[in-house]
Amino acid sequence: MHQLPGECPICGGEMFITRLECRECDVTIEGRFISGPFSQLTPAQMEFVELFIKNEGKITHMETELDLSYPTVRNRLHEIIRAMGYEPGKGESEKINEEDRRKILEDLNSGKITSEEAMKMLKN
Image (cartoon, rainbow, N blue to C red; front, side, top):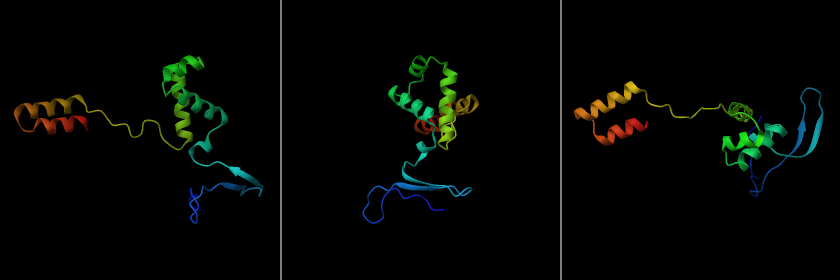
């Protein structure tokens, strides 16, 4: 298998998927198909994404428009994130724990580190 090129290597034009084949039963479908992470979503999930964008990503607005609870909206969003091949919450920076924060402030107070170093450590 090869990675699907996004543009033509000759002219730079947009490339389209025009043929799909099933390895199991040898069925072939021809036409113009979209690809990418959104192509993995169901129509209902795409509708949710469209509404999410319309509401500027504000879950509270989604709650009102869909008449659903916050956890339900959040769960649907997580399902879509997983369907696109990602894991919800990955990449979020971990917050510094209270003990480490206290140690940094003590080191700053005793002159072991500068205020710039302390700020950098607290941000990371």
